[in-house]
Length: 312
Image 1 (cartoon, helix red, strand yellow):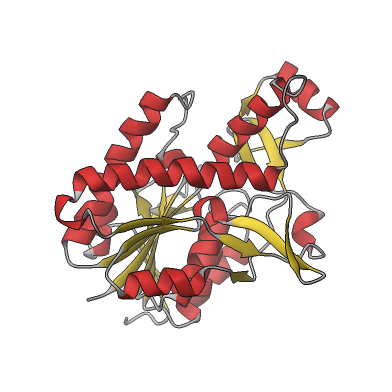
Image 2 (tube, rainbow, N blue to C red):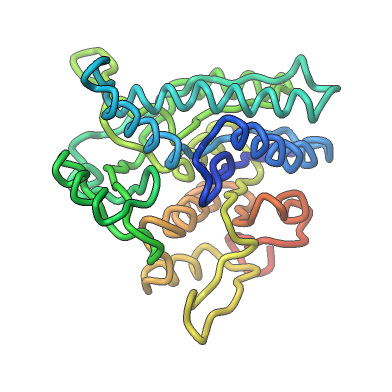
């Protein structure tokens, strides 16, 4: 029985153009659970991680609007809040989708240790929340937020996105996987924390969920890492006349593409980095694909597959 870590984007629960209303969240969770359930039903052990970019951004805006009545919470606790409610939505959707596994579902609040002195804090790159109008941009900058263009689609708030060093709950996640639980863990890239004077303290950042998914995949000795995004495959020359899909690549080829500027830091870049990191670290393969193609890609019938050698 193989073990697969499936990393869902934050857009899996709040799709582009949606407001994040609870009815949308429930419907999107149901669609996601159908795709993940198909992988689990095929006999794989599954760990689900998920992003929280849209959700934590929306929550931060709610906090600011209500600041006159309720003290706003720091970003790392907003991350914990999104882990809780998104984990609940995912588990309930899987409970409906997999009636034979209802006593083998678990969501774990997960902390990721980061180094606050590394470069990720001086150069914010992680987009969160909705796209901003010109007036919203002026208000955001007045609040001290950093904003930037997101892959040519518009302007969003960006926050530090440090590389995770370790996962605090790694042993607990592995124990549940070994006991055949379908586990939801590492939501939103984990709650960013740092060691300080013998304690764990929260750090204001949003860790890229794909990087944490690679960490979790290594810790549970997963065979495969599947990074779910909004496209069926990775494209080379994206948005140009030379655009073409990339069906299969090695880690060395992918690294060359990355160095050549094919994959932006705030978009496909972290997925490529996570795929390389996992496969070069001993994983059999990584896949980048869409929710709709998830089960087919795991069967080898779609997506972009990253391996160590061309003949694998």
